[in-house]
Image (cartoon, rainbow, N blue to C red; front, side, top):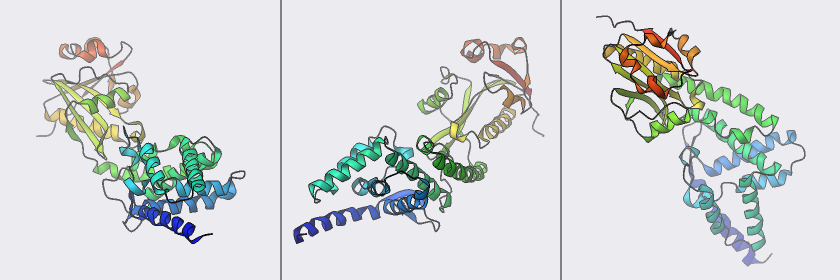
Length: 336
């Protein structure tokens, strides 16, 4: 090998060193923010630790993909999964990878870029394996790290599911990690603040996602309260009050947060709030959650017994289907 060839490859390695300074949203057990290079190192170690359970894979190809999969972040940094909506992260990373590799021989540039593309297309067994291990290593680090109090563990319950279900081994590892994640998320529930919400597009989007009526959320008599995690609305509840009676409505929780008890937390909050506003009787219509509310002492009732003010609400008079269950609960007055 000529000296000039050695120098060009060293130049590439000097540029790739930038990855050591790119920080991720994960923290180590001592509370230090993790770099992308550190994640890449343990991803490779993760793969080697389970390689004997994945016969038939081209292990060298898998390791190459793992080493290259985040290299493009060396220039513009990492964009966390939770912030990737409406951002073409891959296009930017691919362009940056091309820039990083400019000093390499053409054949290496072609090989590295082909491996990066194969990984992101996730069509081959090798690429699917790296995708799965990448998600699993991220969750493992999140679970063991000394994270800040506002860290959103519950987000990981849905993170990367389509990749970690492609092989029984990945699914088994994922199940163990999900158990840890759920416990960590449950510990956070008591500290999750419930705050007043303005009716806006974010609220409308959550209700639409949960297939709940949203056409009237900007109307008078409506108050909404919700829980935010990592700057996104994850749960909401509403109250439509008319003097001493009110309609409980718009109870919605993002799917990956539904095993944490947030719905019960919100219902308890809204009942206390309703009593403070002078509400004595609380009503609701539901197509899917009748059993849940009955477990909270709501009673099935005939719609005909609803007070006139409740019957005249948009939900009662048309937004909710005729098949919806009607439930009622008498609220206990707050002691004087």
